[in-house]
Length: 85
Image (cartoon, rainbow, N blue to C red):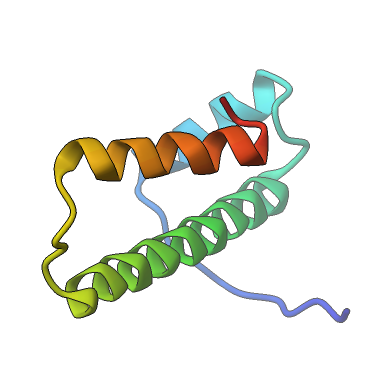
């Protein structure tokens, strides 16, 4: 994958923060730090979109006729079957 050069403007405080992270050995340079931030933002947004989709699916499914204990039991049964409980 090719690289694209960008020019950005940061405050002095932001620049000092990046330098602190580099000096701590967490990153080797500014570009690596910024790429990590972009990657983290991409991962966050993928999770956020999945959560929004799940919420909408729940809203669209309407009101359940099951009781809370019935729902809890179904969740426990599913978790046991998946090996998570």
